[in-house]
Image 1 (cartoon, rainbow, N blue to C red):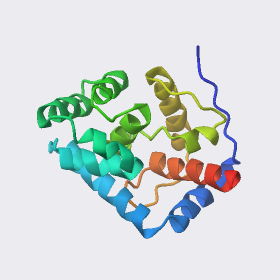
Image 2 (image 1 turned 135 degrees about the vertical axis):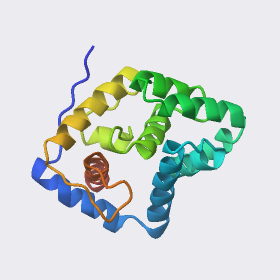
Image 3 (image 1 turned 45 degrees about the horizontal axis):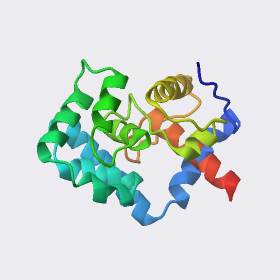
Image 4 (image 1 turned 45 degrees about the vertical axis):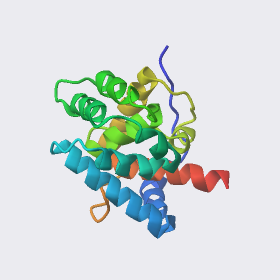
Length: 185
């Protein structure tokens, strides 16, 4: 079964929505996102620590941090090593992260997006709503990721160079999230 995505906002709205996302987010959200992408860079550079993973998880789910810290340092190191390996497929990277307590498909996608913002985007109920969908599993994430990459590569948005993770994928993620937030009150 192939997932079907239909962009709900107009393509012409996406860049403005991404800008609105950042403008309407509070200082705490700015700090959490910045810390998450800094932690992702550290992980990308080989620092597979709980502190770095925690910074990313905290960005998306404060509640999940309490469960995450129950994982051993070795288990975290192994999962992050697989997730960052150039040989790992998206499926292998996601499954390695799902083996950690406190990580679901949405958090696994956020971890990958923070580590490799040019390759991955976060799977979030708001961004899914902006694409007319709401189903979560690894295959679905791969299809979602491919769809978002095609959109980002079509140059309908440009990187927000002054913000964390200045990539077209991250700009698109902000735009889709903001569209959902502004359309659901």
